[in-house]
Image (cartoon, rainbow, N blue to C red; front, side, top):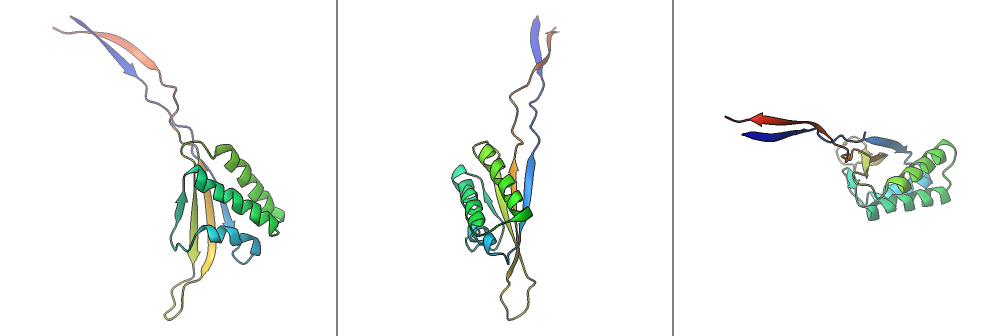
Length: 138
């Protein structure tokens, strides 16, 4: 008796890509991104398109508040990628706050904020049959 047996190659993933942006907390134009933290003390992750649109709004506000030079160029690059990738699976943004060291009797202050925008890493649909064999069973 012959039994057909197929060997499939597993699916590949597209490479994960990311943009990192460090916000100068002292600059007034960085305030819209600090507001996105919504008082959280730990990293927050935005995955849904609705949540990612808050970043696009913060970029527009930052431009209106006077972001310029290299910061403006980086914000525009972030906005371009955000608009292209916002609806793709695996797209997310992480907001990572950094606080001053603990000093007894004082509250920790936000000293830095990093935004990491990631996309890609999706399973590709391209997988193929490597070989079809017939196995003889006795």
